[in-house]
Figure 1 (spheres, helix red, strand yellow):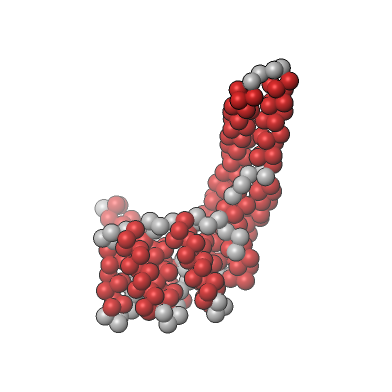
Figure 2: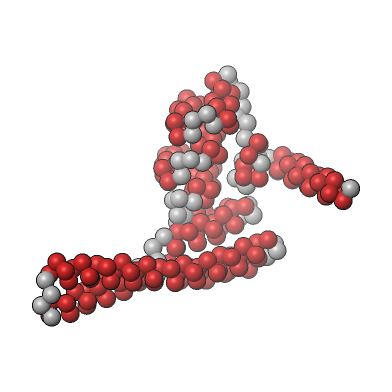
Length: 243
């Protein structure tokens, strides 16, 4: 990454100059390391500021239903991945999620494959893609990577267990929820779903609302019903406010 290389080059130049002026090597090394750290922080902040401007603009376009424009902007920002570590993965996560939520799974998949592992929603979508492609090993590996990066996400643990259960791995689904409860003791959705699996019942995921429905694991009829209910709730609140 360019920011690292530039910082390293400058710090090496500083080290060489200080050694030439007969500064003790340990003192020269400390100053060079400080120069590396300070410059890297400055360059990283500059790059991330540029990236955040693009993400904020794309977010406004998404709110305005300008999906293609948002995707173009995020793709253009991929050039910053050469400058800063993890930027490319974060942008690929956003692009993949936009395609996935539009149900354009074929375009979503290659971007989700390059997702940042701490973006648990993108990793969850990637795991589901593997599940639908009958690649259980990759599905499991992706979920394991996701829960390692985001161990405090209740929906992620439940999503992992749900996909295992749907794949006929009910016992493993129970084990996953058990691991989730160790990270999130007393979590109500995890506790309830563990009880459901132990009793041979279906897992209940709809309480997560839009966060659950974005993964498109429900039928279109169920998603539309949820959207209509949400719309009705918003209309009712507006009427209440006007009164």
